[in-house]
Amino acid sequence: MSITWTISHPLRLVIATGKGEATSADFLFYLDEIAKAGAIPYRKLLDLTNVGIPMSQADIRRVGRHYANLADKKLVGPSAIVVTSDAFANLVKIFDAATKAERPLKIFRDLRAARAWLDEVAPVAAPGGTPG
Image: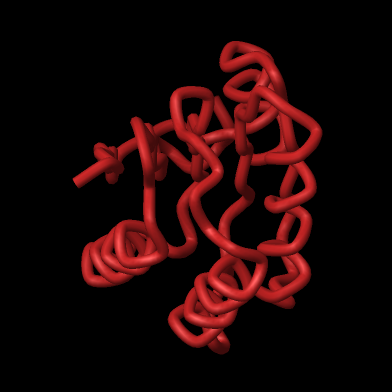
C-alpha cells in the first residue's frame, strides 16, 4: 500500500501520506476506508510529495467520481494537498473537478503551510463548542 493515513476523530482530521507509485486502486481503497470511518466531513491533509505520477487523467477522474459518490449528500471537509510539481498540481485540479464537491481545496508545496490553512479555514471546536 503506497498510501498510509491516520484519522483523529477529536481533531476531525485525516492525515494521509503517499509514497512511491500510488495507483488508482490505492486511492480508491484510501477513500473507502475514510468513508467507513465516517471521516468524509473531516479536514484532510494529503502529502503527495513522495509520489510519482503513475495515474492517467482518466484514472484521476475515476477516483474523483468515486469520492463524489462516497460524499453524496454529505458535508465534505476541506482538503489541503501537498505536491512538488505543476504537473501534479494539474492532476489535483482534474481530481477536484471530477468530485464536484462543495468544499475548500487548496494545493500547496509546503506541508506546514497546508496544515496552517486547514486550521484557519476549518478550526476544530474546543470542548464547549467554540473554535479552539
